[in-house]
Structure formats: C-alpha cells, structure tokens
Length: 79
Image 1 (cartoon, rainbow, N blue to C red):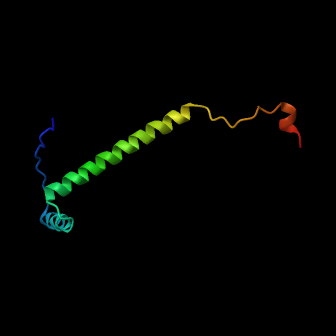
Image 2: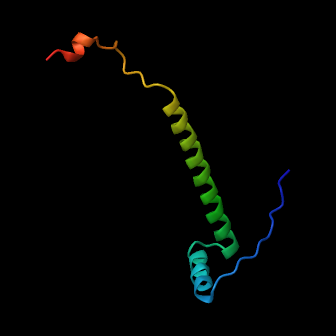
Image 3: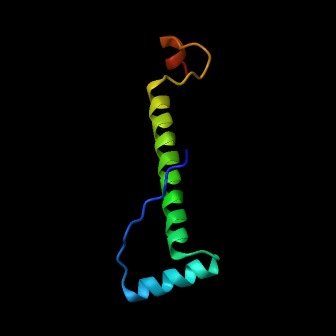
C-alpha cells in the first residue's frame, strides 16, 4: 500500500519564492514537486554518504595485507 503524501508549510521571502517558482517552471514542475525532489535527492545523498562512511570505518578496522612476509632485523638494517 502506498503511503499518502503529507503536506508541509515553508516560509520564503518574496525573492526566494520568485526564484523557486521560476526554477520549477523551467523544470516543468510545481514548487511542491521541485521541493519534494530536492529533499529526496538530499536524503539519497545522505544515505549514500552514511553507507560509504560505515564501509570506510569498517575497512579501517581490518588490517591491510600487502602480501609477503615480515622482514627480519638483519634485512631491515641491511644497506
């Protein structure tokens, strides 16, 4: 079942509202549709960021294997 959309009220000054209306018209959209897509995009971006952050933190917890074996003391100090 599709959840019904909820209405919200936002306050913009006259210049902001004028600009938003023009942007919405340029994108063949309503102001409400434009704002809704803007919010959806921001939420997707935040979800992607959080997912990437969690993966990066998990990667830091696991040691990085470079292959090979550790050098001996003699090999380390050999010139």
